[in-house]
Amino acid sequence: MIALLECREARAREELESWLEAVREAEEHAAAARQRVEHARIAREEVLRALAEGEGVARRAESGPGRYRRRCR
Image (cartoon, rainbow, N blue to C red):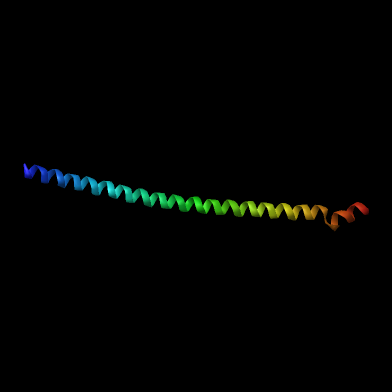
């Protein structure tokens, strides 16, 4: 009887170790995914900022002195 219980305990420990390893791997994957999300968020903000700056430059160019001179000629 004791031998049977020892065998069950050994299998249970192996199963536990297997599950703990799976949890560690899942945590690593989750950390990598969080990092990718953060990089994507930063890149999106940079693109939006660049687009906003580009629109501001385009508006200034359209309403700047060069356009006024063309109308007056």
